[in-house]
Structures are given as C-alpha cells and as structure tokens.
View 1 (cartoon, rainbow, N blue to C red):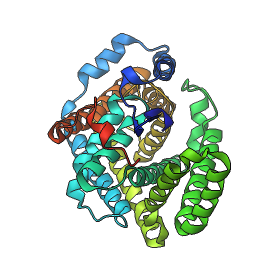
View 2: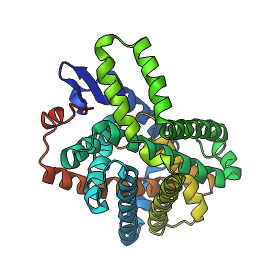
View 3: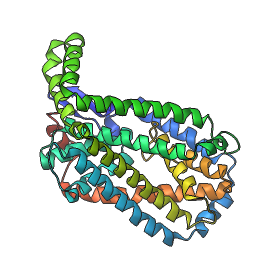
View 4: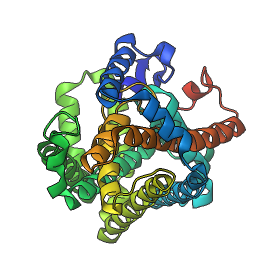
Length: 355
C-alpha cells in the first residue's frame, strides 16, 4: 500500500485521490484494464450481446443484492472479531465503516478504501490506523486462501481455461503459485502473532541496521501497533472462526452469482460459479482502472465460455453481475461517508498522525 501514503513533515498521510497519485500508477492500471477488455470482447457479436442484456429478467438481481449485503454484514462481523483483542466494537457499528471501505475500493485506484476505513475507525473508535490495517491485511490473506480453495475444488476444470475460452495463461500453475504466496503470508502472520516479542526483536534489529536514526522511533511505533493488530491470531479458535467466516462470506457472494444467473438463459453448477468467483476475485488483485474494469470481466467470461456458455450471453451476464456488485455497495458506502462528514481534501490528513 505504499502508493496510498506519503511521508511529509507531519508524518504519514493518505494519498488517495486520483489527481495526487503518481500518473504512471493510474495509467498503468488503465492500460491493464484495456488489455483485459480486449481479451474479453475479442470476437464478441455486439448485437447478440445487447440482445442478451435486454432479454434478461432483472427481478432476479434483487435477491442477489440482498444475499450480497448479508455477506457484507458477515464481513463487518469478521472485522469486529479480528479487532476484538484491541477493542470490542459492535458489528452494527462496523457495518457502515465496511461499506465505506468497499465504496472507496470501487471508485479510487489501488484499493484506497482499505486505508479509508482504517482512518474512519480511528476517528470513531480511537483504534490506531496501523492496528486496523494489520487486521485488514489478515482479512485479505484469508480471502485469498478461500478463493484458492474455491479454485482447487474445481481443479480438474481449470485446463479448459487455457484453450477455447480465450483466456491466456496456465491457470493451474498460477493457482499453485498463488497458494504458495497466500499460505506463506498466512504462516508468517501467524508466527508474528504467536511470538510477538521475538518478532519485535527481529524487527528492531532490521530497523536499527537498515533505517536512518531519525526514523527509528516512528517505525518502531508503527511496528508495535501493527503487531497489536495481529492479536486475534494468537488463538487457534479465533483463526478457525475467521477462516469459517471467510468461507461463509464467499459462499454468500457466490449465491449472488447464482441469483443473477437466473436472469439469463443459461445454467451452470454452483461449483462452476465458485470457480468463477475465485478466479475473478484473484484477478482483481492485478492493478487496473478503478472498479476492477476488465480484470473482473475477462476471467469471468472465460470461465463461462469454458463451461459451454455462448460468448454473448457470458459477456452480458458478467457485465450485469459486475454492475450489480459495484453499484449497491458504492451507493450505500457513499451515503455513510456523507453522514461521516469527511472531506477528502484535508480531514483525513490530521487523523492519520499515528499511522
């Protein structure tokens, strides 16, 4: 997240507006999105595509949105659970902050919403931004593990994605590499959480050896608060509960995929939609334009065409699904952000002094 914050005389501050981001980071995301859109739309018959979109029965989108928001509530509960050792905060208080974070991820580059919700939590509950970010990173690690589990449940189907579907690359190999990365990160965090004093000693050694003296106090403070954010991982029961909750969250999101599918003239198994969910969400970790344009759509269309869904229907479904995932949470998050009365220009700067 180094592209979300910058060091100034007053300390570390958010760097979340497109105007203030480095231009190359923004345009790199745009170029990657264009590449993925080109992959998604190659050979698509636009008349058939618009026909599929127009003929969809959109009433099915409504229960899908309902199921998705239950999943968002579960995300808020999981975050409440991760923050428990630091401060007990009711899930109903975490829900608005969670929606604001996902709104920020949808409209700003580089997942700026993660920093935004950590800042708002500090504003409302006094939890340090560093500790909050530690719990958010843990969330992302568990999400990645679950996404890879969804893929491995359907591992035998992955070979189809390297052929006629038009998706480039060996997805099986990517899944194995991704699993190694996420499992390795999870084990690292678990060790850091279970042995905080040892981790702090190692951290102190690196800080004193590598960083200039003027940064020692600041970085040590950040490290201490970050380790506090990992406290929930010190209990095996907590780890199991966070994993269980993550599975529930992503099964509910797959439920939304299933409801939206009912609006279109095709049918694949729930397991196929789990595979699609896993692949598209891992693909959205690739830098892209705001809203995961292209990086969500191309892999989603590839999965469906691999299962024999006609290209125009697969593209229409993926577009509608993407919009249905993006619009409701973005509108609700914007509503809650307005209620917070936060100004992007200056209010966040003063509230991240302890980052």
